[in-house]
Structure formats: C-alpha cells, structure tokens
Length: 442
Image (cartoon, rainbow, N blue to C red; front, side, top):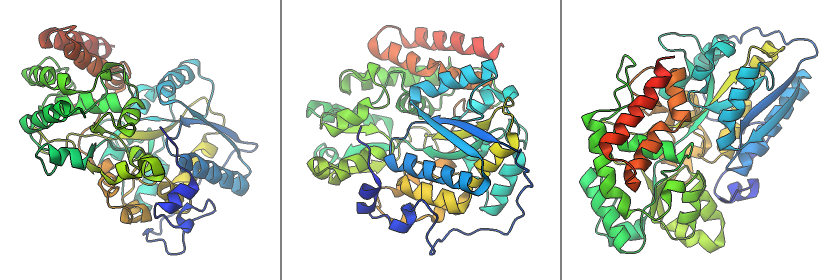
C-alpha cells in the first residue's frame, strides 16, 4: 500500500487552500450555525496524550498533527499524538481501559466506546454543541456515538471509511456486464467469469479489521441474516445465515487464492499488481494507483460501486468509524473535551477531511459541502458513508458484547471455516452462536 502526499493530493484536484494546515479556504461552503460553545475550563498545567489508528493517506497524519499543534499554540496544552497499526489499536485500547493508565484520548474503531463504557467520561455537551452548529450528526455517527436507548454520548465519531466494490471496468465489461450485478446469482456468475479469465475477484476472509468485517457482514446482511435481533438476542444460527454460507461455498472457489490469510493491505497489493480484478476497499487504493505513473492506466480502468444488494432493501454496508473516547483516568478531562471539539470545528476539520481525499467520510451533515466531494466523480460514492443503515451487531443494540464479537472475528472465522471446508455451514453457524453467546451472558 502506497501513501500519497500533500503534493499528490494537489495533483488530484484539491486546492492548496483546502490542504493548508493553518485553516480553511476563504471560499468555504460549510454552513455554520451561531451556537454557544460549552464552557470548558481547561485545567491548569494540562497536557494530553492521544492514540489513534495509523493513516493510509499521508496527508491524514500531516494535517492532523498540524491541527493538534494549532490547539497547543492556542491553549498552551501540549498534545502528543501516537499512530498505531489497525490490528494493534483494539489491544492497546483494552490495556488502557483495564489498567486505568495510558492515553487520555483514544480514537478507536466503531463500537469501541461501547466495550469500555464504564471507563469513559460522557461527551454529550460537546456532541450536542457540534450537532447544532453543523447541521446534525449522521446516522452511523449517532449509532456509534450514543449509549443505547439514551441521548448520552460516549464517543465522538470523526468519520468513517466506506468499503464499496473496487473493480476493473474493462474486465467486468468483457465478462458481459456493464456494471456489477446487484443480485446474488448475477454476482456469482460475474465472479465465475472473472476467475475463468484469469483475473479473479478477491475478498478478505482473514482477521482483517476493515476488509474482513466488511466482507463477512455483506455476505450475511445481503441474505437478511444478522448477529442479533432488535432486542439483542443472538440469532446468528438461522436459515438466513445458512443460505449465506451455502452461497459462500459457491463463491469461494472463484476468488483469488490466499484470501483466508489476507489482512487489511493484502487486497490492495493484489489489485495493484493486476492479479485481482475486484475487491472492496476505501478510496486509498484508487488514489495510490492514480498517483503512480506505472499504475495510472489501471486507475483509469478502476471504478467504485456499492456492494450488491442481494435480498437487502438498502446497501448492506456499514462504515469503519473513527470513534474518539476520553478515559476517566485522565487528569485533564476538560482539556481532552476541548481538544476534540477544536479538531471537529470547521477551521480544522474541513482542512483535514479534504486532505483525506475521501478516505474518511464526515459525521456531521454540514461537511457534505466540503470541496473533496465535488472533485473526482469516482470519490463521490464515499460521501454518504455515515448514512448507511447497517452497523456492527445489526439488528441489535451496540454494546460491549457486540463489540467483543467483532473484535474476536467471530463472523469472519465462521465464514472462513465454511469456505475452506473446515466446517459445514451448520457446524460453523452453531459454533459462531456458541462463541457469540459467551459474550452476551456476561
């Protein structure tokens, strides 16, 4: 996976003002309501340490650090920001929560605040202010930000990475399709034809935080299967799940070899090398191809499309959400809340979201008018990521248990077991049910 720099982003059509780390363009289209900010009295001598997932886009880190520096210059609060690998963030969050020591703030993924809810301070006053100021929070932001059946915010979502299909237009057309079919039988037929042409599709069936969860969830949701019902009962061992797993038995032989060991960069490498014709991914794959002269033709042949509906009524896709939380052990809670608020204000956030070139999609409605969404038309599909109607633990409440099931890769491993023949669909669904219920009994 190749990073792209500020210069690369400029060459892809973003304005210099949109990337300037000192503020937003004077021509900003973001509408801001006149709302009184919360009175956060920053503690004397405050300093903060933050942990967040490593960037896939270099400009993400560059602008994030520059914005943090601006907060220090404005308030005198020193900020240390550490970036860690995606596979490491869950483990380090668990250590911090269980030890009661470490970073004041962690930006984790999606339902992380619901796992450690008793270790966190509320962020409601900041969330309410930002929502009123910037046109309201989008669907997934509220889902992941609020405690279930409550208006209390335990996380502040910074954005989400969508995982739509990324595919070679010429190869799909050569297989007889103008676009990727939305139905299961058509999708399987396309994958069979791509495999026969020597350019198979590839979807992660390894323990990949983003890509693995995306594929397993799509497989289930597109068959109307789910981990939980609306009340939170485990219903993974269902006829809908069995239908999904039997479909996977047909789909798996059409995929590129090795997908059961893929992590979150494996599909990028396979697609970039021309070995794989279709996968799911955030926008970073497309831009890494576009910036490299050696793969510019591949980028031109690349397009995005929502994952197939199957039996679902809306696109069966969630969004890997960056979700900020502040720990009770922090001696400087007001400084931490003030920092998060500062980073989500227009002067900082618009700069950052544009610099990400669509990799992270905004959580607040007003940022739908950011410049990034009016540039490259192949990026626009990511704009509404946080309005997707599916989430980890769908259809039930987000909780510590549903988060633990995702962190333990229960659904991915169920799918992998069937794909490789290690278990029948019935055996795998029963084992997934057993593993999931262990967490929901606690």
